[in-house]
Image 1 (cartoon, helix red, strand yellow):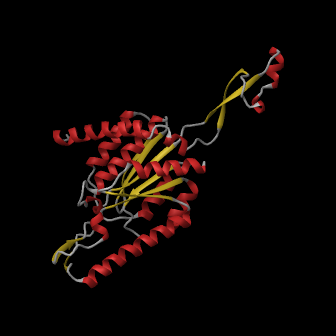
Image 2 (spheres, one colour):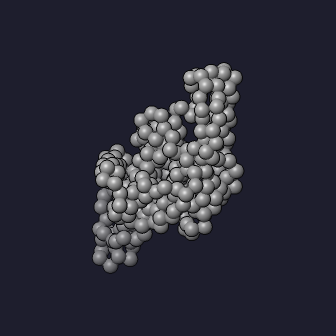
Image 3 (cartoon, rainbow, N blue to C red):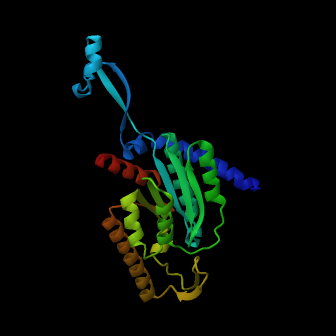
Length: 291
């Protein structure tokens, strides 16, 4: 049984993310991620402004005046949320932990999916696939998904992006809209990333915390790697060390930018102290223009 305080927190989060999905992204998601084709719906009488290419000449000849064919978008899509629950997401120094931000984004995307009658599923992973939630429709399914993201305790704390992308490509047989939500603290997943981007519509939402970017000058501190458990005593007052820290972060960012660009993947960066709505809005608007 969930603790009452946690259950209340999840309930509040559930309604907040649903409201944000409905109020702030109305229509944007649907325009950004279109169906895979058009299907015939009905025939109706011609109206001024209708495209003459849609006239049904057989029906028009039968009734003596023009009728047009009406098509609807073949909408039903499958959305897969690939969610990183590794130890580095337990970190946060500002408004929230990285895992809380991950849950917020996942919840909004899930509500956007079911709002347009799409199916949504999730893969929770660390160094292995921790849990697979098959795609389904409906608010009850999203409620279950949100609870899992909030409460699931991974068996391992390290990260394997190559492994989870390989698993995704195996279980998702048909084309899907995929959101990989992670801090992407891993390497060696270039090949599986390219394969995923060819098979699916992949977007990477990268989550960071400001304290990860720059080592503060606070003297000697003990740092612990949340994924390996290793600790080290470092002198953060060392200008040389802080410079190396910054250089490492810059190299990591350049590496990710390069492999995402080569794979033709959209990337959104979110921070634990920054906005969520604006970056996602820019993503949807950019995709809408391309469509």
